[in-house]
Amino acid sequence: MRDLIDKLTERHTLSRDEFKTLLACDSPYLYERAREARRQVYGSRIFMRGLIEITSYCKNNCYYCGLRRDNTNAERYRLTGEQILACCKAGYDLDFRTFVLQGGEDDYFTDDVLAGIVREIRTAYPDCAISLSMGERSYESCRRLFDAGADRYLLRHETADDAHYSALHPPEMSLVNRKKCLWDLKKIGYQVGCGFMVGSPGQTLDHIVEDLLFIEELKPAMVGVGPFIPHSSTPFACEKPGSLRLTLNILAILRLMSPNLLIPATTALGTIDGAGRELGVQAGANVVMPNLSPAEARKKYLLYDNKICTDESSAECRFCIQNRLKSIGYEIAVSRGDYISHEFA
Ligand code: SAH
Ligand code: SF4
Image (cartoon, rainbow, N blue to C red; front, side, top):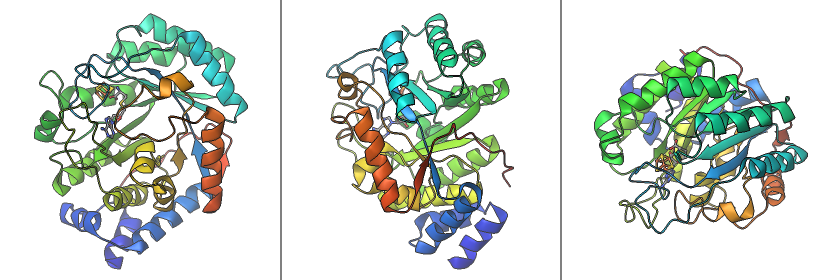
């Protein structure tokens, strides 16, 4: 196994079969090499992004997600521009230099409305990065938001396999369109993040290898990977959550494929295991995304069951994360934490 891990470290890529072997392995050496690769680029500094969950309305019906439109048990809310600006203010005072606006696909947030909010944040916080994670929008829409001051866009591809994509989404959604959006975002000039859930129903190791190869092709700045966790009011209520070990292996493999990649240790990882985010960092992740949403919003933005950090305040989450990182020898960087360009293999 060490040979294979050394090979990935040196060449940044492997054959399909070799990737599969590494995905299934149980080797602390994989995490050691991933930590070393990250240290060479980023030292022991971890970037922090403030997540603002701006709307729980969604017109889509993804089978896995608690915000899907057919979930009539979900409580819906949307934040006003003023509330979003207040989250940024609180976040700035807590050392955040990146704000991530995330939400369901909510027609209330037209280009005019969202671009107006982005412009206000851009004017008030010229030294901060603005990331959007608002689902699939048209090329024109994404360009307008970029022109208004957004720097980054997170849109997980969810799976790079057509048949698997169809098993996770209703027929009106397509992988072709998802991928097109990602390429459009790159073309416009965004730092782009793709990604997928680990252990989503029907996922095989072959699918994950396809995901890795798609990432190699797209060359994103960020990749978000976290375990699938069932939500009780979705068609996948009775499915099993994703595995901790497999998630950590994927984070480490991604780090070795692209040492400069921005890789979050996700809230979902912290939900399936009390030390999940720390383990994620120890497997090569270099980003944490504490919640900056107002208290009333947190309890309603439920993508999956048992989500952590819904009772804490923004300040509590920020210092909790800092302490967790400190306990394993890392510190938070007070900076935008932009991607440093690196060529994939
Ligand atoms: N509407 C936007 C952003 C919100 S959803 C979008 O879909 O892109 C953000 C991410 O949450 C999704 O990309 C998905 O990968 C993840 N997610 C949704 N439901 C989940 C679940 N049950 N378990 C784990 N992650 C989930
Ligand atoms: Fe909507 Fe995103 Fe959830 Fe799909 S994953 S239902 S697009 S919030």
